[in-house]
Image 1 (cartoon, rainbow, N blue to C red):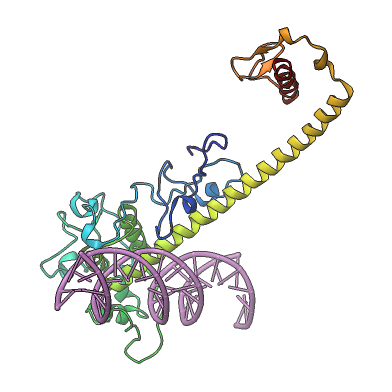
Image 2 (image 1 turned 90 degrees about the horizontal axis):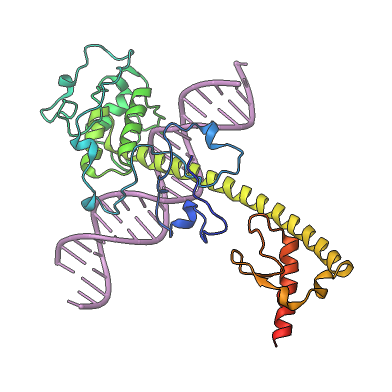
Length: 296
DNA sequence: GTATACAGCGATATTACATCA
DNA sequence: CGTGATGTAATATCGCTGTAT
């Protein structure tokens, strides 16, 4: 994973929740690799920029309003490889079977990255088929989820293929405009509301994961800084002890003081910036103070 | 140009259910 | 088999934004 953190130079940590003002629903998916596993996301190293690769293929091009959505790649690009169909699906179910003339699963489909037919998916599931059928007939939108016998909602489990299809769509676009929503719903034989809910939940999951990663990163930062602080405190104590026991620099003639070009400190000798220790820096500071005293 | 009502949408919290160990 | 943990679909609510009046 690419890391862009520089605690010394960067005033701002690359945390999504710090970059976002308030309402931005999703982290910006940048500088990440594809195919990161959750194991890798939970890595214990102190690697910085923790930007989850939750949308590996595309940057987020979020538009606050459907009317301003950017062109939709998966509405215009040719379909990707045809996915394996659900083996549990009725073989007789074809796209044409459910096509009303505005088929979205044709090769020139304006919907899917890969052709797939889910028309029989939910009907295979005796428990959920009726509900989905009803919803797909346009009856169910917000607030009308009870099934026909008035019972409470039944939890629908989307099939693997449906989930995969939605995931692919989500990679292309994390939000849907109404047209996309309808197209996806038709393609998956789900209600537009279900598609909408799925995307809402998916965004929430994405954000949650990113938050977890951000927290983990902050935790590591805190630990690192604590350790650094501890080390510096210890060093300071040593330097104070050194000052009281060995004030050798006070005896140096002022004419031997020079300015180190690399670190811009007054020193008795040009210091090696890379190997300069804090102790020598301390001595330099003392010498600088002495030089200032002499000049004034 | 401004104020108001309304609709649509996304974010978020929560609930309900399915699945698994 | 019962149970708790976990994942996720679905619901409820709120706030924001654009639009019509």
